Length: 219
Image (cartoon, rainbow, N blue to C red):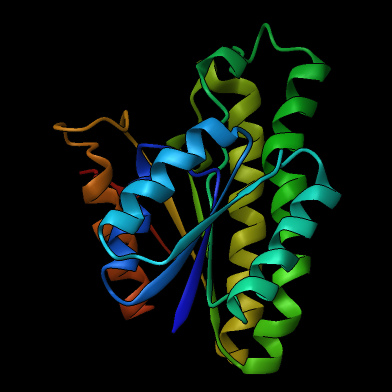
């Protein structure tokens, strides 16, 4: 049975991804900062007969993140898919003319550094197996600069660059790397419904015919 790890799991996109992949035969490992957020998610998944466990880790604590991923491998036997979408909410965003060095550093600690640590941890077993998938979920400022998201955009575009480099070098090893830039607010019942994003992710994972997509599709 395959296993997906969702880093930054919450009641929105994280839960939708867990349900989508779980309903298609995956074990689910949820990684996030707050245990009180994770417990109800695991309970809901278990009610759907989806085998799941949670792991508490602050992505900014790189060694704790790595330890959590190694524990997932120990518990489930392997990691087949890892999805990276840590929360870096609006309270952390700064305008390009107002941001300070510290604001950019904080975004790098939330996005770039843990992404690299995550890959360094899961990649050896994926390479040994000759299969696996690494999925990066980010914002539209990764593709289209938005002045109000000055610090976040620097990190998001850097994350996209890293992901595309990984995609280019790992596809020959049987490992898929994908990227989705979300161009809307993630909210139930809207065009940014997390279930729709999860459907898009699963489709991208199954087909593995392109590196990235923008959600929703932009004209």
